[in-house]
Length: 236
Image (tube, rainbow, N blue to C red; front, side):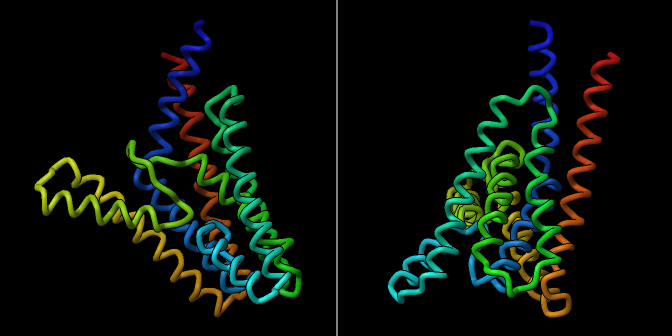
């Protein structure tokens, strides 16, 4: 019983760290960065934006583009499998570090991608990227208690407009903080996508290493913060 209570306490602290604005901003920046990367250099397929991929799949089907169908279809499946694995890992996690392990697939994939030429078929590349993006999305789902996505921005944009509308039109003060948070996320995703597009012109496939470095640093810092929190609680 005591162990269970300690785990709950550590999980609450870990959730608080995972939901900070800074964490959400950085992860969403990387989400936009990688999505733009796979679209521009890996077969015009979005690693996280599955709404777009469904449209691309339908277009490929209509045009008889078998390669495009395989690429988009496998990417959608990869994203689904990533979300399922997140749920399983979270359910059976025995410590507060579970989010760190969920970040590893995307970090590894993004590092490897920087070495792979564009001549390699994209259906070997984008689906596993989507798998990693889904795991990041599933592991970090809230910003200061509010649900959000760090790998695509349609939902964040919708919430931004609705929150600001409620604040200004209806005078609902409670919507001001959500509006600010969602605006921050839209800016983060857009900035990541723009910077990715610009850097790809200079560094080509190696541009993704920028996102890799950021994710590695974030994961290390997050792990150290959790470790410190667990140790501090253990000494008290």
